[in-house]
Length: 267
Image: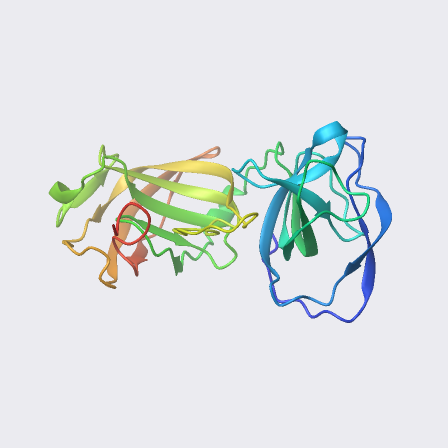
C-alpha cells in the first residue's frame, strides 16, 4: 500500500482519460485538458470504476448510489471494477464528451492505489509480528490501534450492545460481549467515526480479517459519555488465527482518546 502524501504541483496541464464505451478495457486518453495546479479544495477521494448509462464508464462512490464522470492522469490504467484511491476534486457539471446521466466530475490529481475489488490478497503472516500498533482510533466504547501506514489494525469491539456489566472486569477471549480481530487492508482508518462523510471520501478496504481466539484485557471502569477522556487497556496473551496457523502476539497497549464518542455513542 502507498499512503496519501502531499504532492507538489506545477502550473501545467495534462491530457487525461475519460469514460470509454468498452467496459473491462484500459481507460483510453482523450483530448480533454485537466488543470493540475492543485486547487485549494483538493481532498482525499476514492471511487470504483463502473459502467454507467449506455455503457459509459463512470466513477461510483463506495457505498453510495452516486456516479460522476471520471478523470485520471493519462499514465494510470484502470479497468471496470478497480478501486482508485488518491486525491483530487469533485465538481459540478460534466466534462466535454462526458457520460450522460451524471451531473458531476470526479478528478484524480494524484493516485496512490489502483486495485481490483475482486483481487484476493493474503498478507505475509510474518509481517504481522513486526507491526507496531501505535495509532489509536478515537471513537466508540471499544479500542482499535493501527500502524502508521494503515495496512494493519487490531480492534476490540463490543458486540452485545450495553457493556455496563463489563466495566472494571477482565474479559477473557473468546467472549460473547466483545469481538477482537486483526485487519489487513488499505486506508483502514479512513472515515473512522465521521458523522458528515463527504461524497467520494476515501473508505477502508479490508483484504483479510483474522480473529483473535484467546487472550484477555481489562475493560475500563468508565462511565463517561464523550467528555474528552482518554481510556486505555492492554491486550495480553492474544492468539490470532491465521492461514498459517495460530500466531501469538506480544502485549499491545490500546488507547481510545475519545471514549464513548462517535455515531450512536455521544447522542
